[in-house]
Length: 229
Image 1 (cartoon, one colour):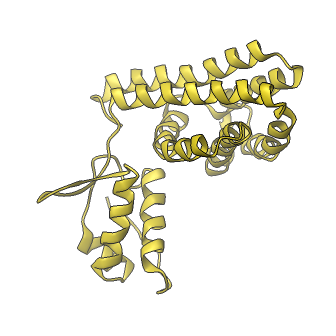
Image 2 (cartoon, rainbow, N blue to C red; image 1 turned 60 degrees about the horizontal axis):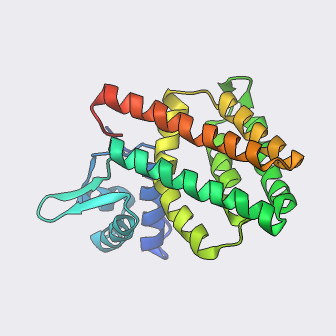
């Protein structure tokens, strides 16, 4: 695949290279399992190898790339076990966050914080068809970050943000290839409506459906395509 890279302003090059590569991984322009050849990236971005090396080390610490000694650096693949574990952790975190919202009385804070994301996702979809995929998926992420953030646990939030990089890859695959965004947005509305009614059990049920359903669909796809994303 011929990957196109943008021109960079030669200040803080490591940070810029990091964001370029991270964006291409999350958008799946750099597919899982693809080798990232340092000299090629450096040449394409018109930088030395050093900022590329440093950016890849950072991506490696986040788990988005895998650095194999004497073999090279590769975009990390998500196995069926990875997907299952990530979604299970996500469910535990979001159910805990929902419970804390009721305990702390921060439901209204979450509803206010998530309103802009909900509005943006409404604009991004037209019934079951995408108008703007990137707008939808970025606000889908923000909706769930607002939920976890309203629980008021900074350590949990950092953990969730880091895990969310991998969830972003998995959800992007799911949204593009398995399910329509309109269906996902209807599930978001069900979660919001349950919070507005103050019905904790309905919130837990809606969240469980929302998180478990894509996990099962992605696992089905993985079994059909050989076991990795």
